Amino acid sequence: MSKRVVLVTGASSGFGRLTVEALARRGHTVFAGLRDVTGRNAKAAAELAEVAGSLHVVEIDVTDQDSADRAVREIIDAAGRIDVVVNNAGMIFPGPLEAFTAEEGQRQFDVNVLGALRVNRAALPHLRAQGSGRLIQIGSVGGLVTTPFTGLYAASKAALESLTAAWRHELAPYGIESVIVDAASYPTNIGLNAAMPADSARLAVYGEAFAGFTNAIVARSAEVGGDAGEVAEAVVELVEGTGHQLRKLVAPASQLEPLRTLDRVSAETSERVGAAMGVAAFMTR
Image (cartoon, rainbow, N blue to C red; front, top):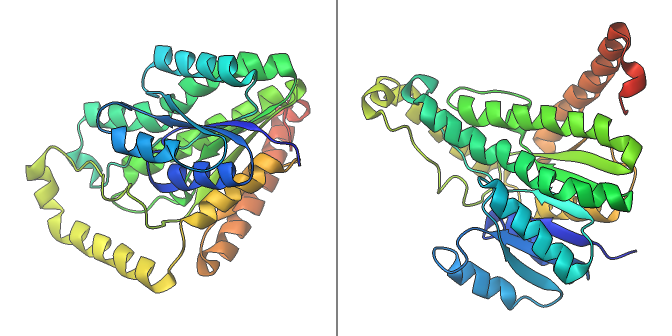
């Protein structure tokens, strides 16, 4: 197995933290991307610096193109190349859509969607010059199936699905793969750091239904269980493997079969639509 140089954004906690630690244990050269490494994430940065293996902390704010460019240049200067980008940085705005302002929606998309666009834009000239590389986006089952009170988050993850597919088609001629990991709900800090709607009055209109939905999700999560480490393991497989499909599903067994059916039907239908539109020759399976 050849060792890779990997950038993982949003590595202070959750899937990102588990992923950088798992990759470092496997002997890869890993750059853990964090915001504000001397401030709010100073403790996480110090802890990551102590992890065994070739693990380095790099400061990156995915909402800032200059920051993304600097981080990638730092990686190239230190390691001489970059092989894989894992776009993990994300946040969630749960609640009824009516209670959110357009500015809150913009913030949701700025991190979850435009963040990946910025980081990949910074890395792609280097990957293309190498003639190889891999873009891995951390998506969500919510990007495939939208439930109540997850509209902003689901919309951002659905947009990330589309970007991943477009990168896959456009970059294949340059030897660059693009894949998305669609994960079910696992216990991480993303829920603890959720940004609730600023309009408390409109949120209150949906209070009973929103509370019931939240309780149902929590109860179901406790029932089916799940280990967030499974997502990190899936990313490791994608970093080390070749010939991936567009989507890798990671979910408890009870959810996996219907999701696989949805994925298969979606892929088959996309091919048929592409053929009907006369653009099948430009699409990568």
